[in-house]
Length: 334
Image (cartoon, rainbow, N blue to C red):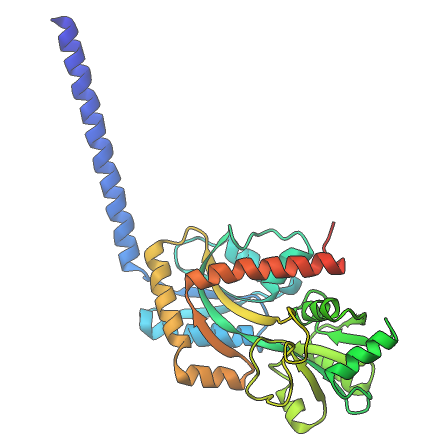
């Protein structure tokens, strides 16, 4: 009898504990659901990992301005430049995954892990939100260089390996990596001359300090249209609308060497799914608007918005591409 009583009491206590655990679990679930349903309740911050003025910053500010009235809360941009964009990426990776911090990242965030050890993992520390589109890189020379076309450049480079040089906005920039990819694919050798940004790189080429320069198309269309520089090649997969007479890299006969400077939106890993779905929906819709497309195209950026699944696959392919390029060029840190 006493044994049955003890067993019965134990069973009742166990059942009571189980019931209590279920109630606590349901309350927690309802609390989380209620919190997510109320999002956003305060200001959302978009981290841009470069200084104001470039496509990365322009996109961040455009998204912030358009999202704010849709979500009913302020959306602000915070520029966190430095270390080729790594400072801003790290700040976003360490942010709370609550839907109140986003990162608008450019191609450099995808290149950096192939060059050096970085304190973040794009696939583990972040979750995709939206792919925004890309800008091609363009290879330029001045009218006195004697280089008339990309075919001419390749021929001269093969005749005199290592004599011609090229400027870029910096080591590890997407234009630099595009040139490394071009050299490997065309089997040529040029000497890299890195500068502190697009402006100095273009100035050096115009003054004849460098033979050619590789930069993103944004920011140099004025020089091209004025005829002060000659565009030899665009590196994107699709022809750039404002450069109808400048061949793409594939059109020039160079296979498997296309590259672009992409722009993407990421959130810290662990951001709740309902919030991610809402952000994906709204940002993709904003970027699909014809007025946004036209505005960005004039700034040197082609919108091609896609959702999280596409961005997840694109991240994998871009990271693999730049890792391969860096290893082949001997740029990866040991």
